[in-house]
Each structure stands twice: as structure tokens, then as C-alpha cells.
Amino acid sequence: MNFRQNALSKNIKLSQIAPDVEHFSPFFLSEYLKSRSTTWAYYLTSTGWLFPLLLYKKFGIGWAQLTSYPIHVEKDYSLKPSQDDYDALLELRTEIDFFLYPTANAISDFTPQGAEIMPFGTYVSDLSHSQEELFSSLHSKHRNVIRKAEKSGVTISTGAQYADDFFSLLEQTYARTNTDHVTKNEFMALVSNLGEHLSVTVAFDDAEVIQGGAVFLWSPEGCYYLYGASIERPTTGAINYLHWNQMLKMRGYGVAKYDLMGARPSPEKGSKIEGIQRFKSRFGGDFVAGNLWQTTFSPNKRKLHGLLVRARNHYRKLRG
Image 1 (cartoon, one colour):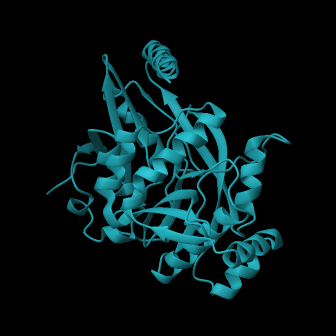
Image 2 (image 1 turned 30 degrees about the horizontal axis):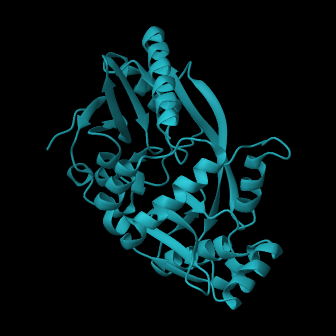
């Protein structure tokens, strides 16, 4: 199959463009993209950079969202995308009305000219290190509570059979903060479509009562922390132990990195976000800084989209 440069190739498998798909970010996989939208696409620039996109259209409004930084189709890792490669995305103004901020893993050094920019980052651990090196890189408080959780009988289990239990935890967790989250249909589509590339992992105490869980999207390129949830007062160290267990499992599979997915450069002191980032930073990963971006081609349609989203969210809250 021939693919046009600077054009969208819609609803195709990644393997039709690049046979060696295992070494791409899991956010590139067509199985992931079709779980998020009925229409998805790959955009190939004239210089060989490939961008994965989710495409949406409702009420005559069209928008797109990137799900990853680009990868070069020749997989020459010495190459880096340029400003021109990101500017090529502006040619999609004939197809869509705006770009939403991408998913949190898609931070980049470059953004299209004129885009609205949000400084962002993430914590990434290099899994090529030995188990001893990884454990010593953890903050001492994390090491202590991991040992405590293990001694107290906390156990970690992984499998699609825990999807319902995890989603119930997710609903409880977000209800405590009164924020929106992925719907059950969306979540179950991920579980169904991603297969082995999605890990639903839960932690139990010594009485086999679930304490918390996490969902990870992974390929040999990296393991990404997608969702997390817990009961209100989980056993000390249970969630820390869950992440440590997942890091070791991914290292055993030969996965290159462990990405805790999302961190702000300067969170507000004393805020919940600062507490979450402190938790992430103590796993010993490097802080990788970059930008998220969005851009608007049709301001009126963007405003209408915002009104519709707020109305939908209000309706969901009224329904409980």
C-alpha cells in the first residue's frame, strides 16, 4: 500500500505502514486508537515522520488529538523531528476545526507555529538498570513502605478479570474529587481491544480485600501508567508496592522504560497535584520536560464545542 505524504491515512492498521510495530509506542497501535474513537488516522510528513491521531466529528464540528510524539518510519533513532514537521500538521486545517491538547505522554520540544502551549512533563525510569539499581533509586520512604506492604501480606495480581473491580475503584476515586473520568464503555473497549498490551493490576491486603489498582499500556518501547485508583484509606505501601511490582515485571519483559504519565513543572504548593507528583518523583525516574499544545482553525466552532462539553458534563453530574 502506498501512503501519501502530508495526508491522512484513516482507519488502517499500523502494520500496513510499518511492519515492525512492536518497537513503536503503544499509543501508536491501531488497537488503542480504535478504542478511543471510531475514526483514527496516521499522518505522514514529507520527511518521513508519522503522527497518530484520533479524529472526531459531532454536530458539524471536527477535531483531532495526537496520541504520541512522532516516530520516523525508517526507525532511525538518531533523527529528531523539526519545527517544520510539526508545522506540517497545520495543513489539516482543511480537515478539522481544531486540535485538542494531546494525551499526556505526547510531550514534545516542538509545537506548531501559533499553537497554545502548556509546559508539561513526566517521570521516566530506565528499566535497563538492574533490580538493585532501580530499588536504590527509589526514595527511602518508598523503599520502606514497599518492604512493609510485602511483609504485611499485600499481594499483586494482573488480568482482564479484574477490569470490573478496577472500574468500580476508579468511580469511587473520582467521586471523591468530583471530576470526570473515562466511561465504562470506553474503558472496556480498551480492555477488549488491547489484549496483552494492557495490564489491569490490583493490590489486595492479607484478607484479600482490594486496596487499589492501576492500568498500564505497554509495548517493548515503554510501559505507561494510564489510570490509577484506590479505596479511601489503602493499606500503607500497597500502591507503592503495586508500581514496584509492575516495574520489575516490565523489566523482565525487556520493556525499555517506565513512564508515570504526566507532571507539571511547578505545581501549586500544598495542592493535590503536588502530592501526586511527589509520589511519582519518588520512584527515581528522571523528570522529562516538554510541551503539550492545542490550536484552533475555527474559533466559533471551538467555542460551540466548549459549550456542548460543559452541557454534557453538567448532565452527567445531575444523573449521578
